[in-house]
Image (cartoon, rainbow, N blue to C red):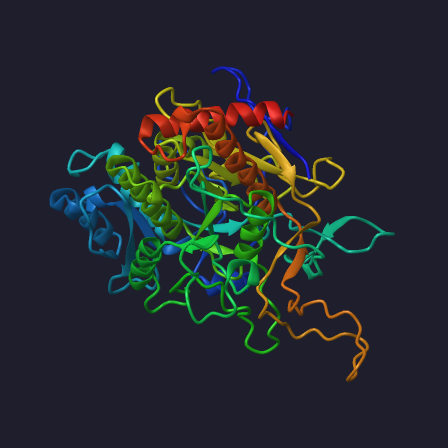
Length: 535
């Protein structure tokens, strides 16, 4: 394997790997069946209007019946009333959720009033933006700037635009355009899981925790899961975060009712297929299990906290990802404020993202940037996949790596591109000055749910002999490609560095989880990575 970290230059200098400096113009091409399944839409810049004084949009994928509105705005009866009046004038009304005491963005559902056939959240947002400059409206541009589309996020395997997969043909080529997931196939791993090491010593006081926000988990002997009947055993390598899953269920109760959009109900990576007739294995079935297995192999002394935010077809809803990150931030705050090492989360690995319609604003004002910034400020190391578009267009949250580090916080976001087994950059990987790490992401072997079997049949099959079955994963292992898998490999290196710096300096012991120590430990770990894995 190969890993290369790029140290962020001083403010004002370009960061990244010296990749493409001019950003590509990339338009999303999302299959209609995928949009229909998630009640989604692609924003076509040439077919929509933008409010005066606001930036012209670029293509993105979003949920046309949903806007994300911060809780404090929803609590403001005067401001919310003004928003409702403006939208009512355009034939649109709001269904608001229950709100808490914070500033977490909540999904607000739009519905047409009598005389209007349909609603579109982009058009509704332009109505609010246009009204913000009027004297008779009780809200301003700053408030409206905090209201956003709910983006459809995609795994870094299935992000559409240029979906590249290995074609398995050694003679005629290495990558080709194909259906997502084509490169995934079952294999046998002739190895035992690496030993976990004894924890609870002075030099190794606690296992660092890597949070994986992905498609959930499936049964595998490496995780102590023989089936889907019970959650992971206590004190095992993998655990789940009920608080995050409950927040996602609450979102679904608001946004999925009466639509084709799908609700995530728990942490299990299922169903294996959404095709009711042919029953092909979905493009991202096993994605989260595969990622957890990479960390189990490359950082066996760490633990994984699995949160399901992604559907088995590789789509995630922006509000779900934000809610999960908020839940992790609250858990970290409890650990730091109450001295609870058992609640600490040290690293976040994100193998998903989206293309923003206004990227210059996304770096500073998006809801996702806000919650990621909060985690960074707590000293949590956040790694995000650069995407598989084979483009230089910024993929968020990975492109947040461009932001300067906060002197009072931990190291900023680490954006991870994929390398081939020979350490060249993979043809499918996004690239640009905003990519700050490279790791092997092609031809990776890892764990896969043992109960997944698809409809494809071997050419030869009888009671005793059979050809190769390309979608029978009874072996529990698969080979796969993508920046999705480069990211957890880099996250594993970071987790190992946290263990090493804590072992060398008792002042940075993993038993210490106060914010100051967490930030210092994170910085020391990254300095170690820059030396150990230079670009």
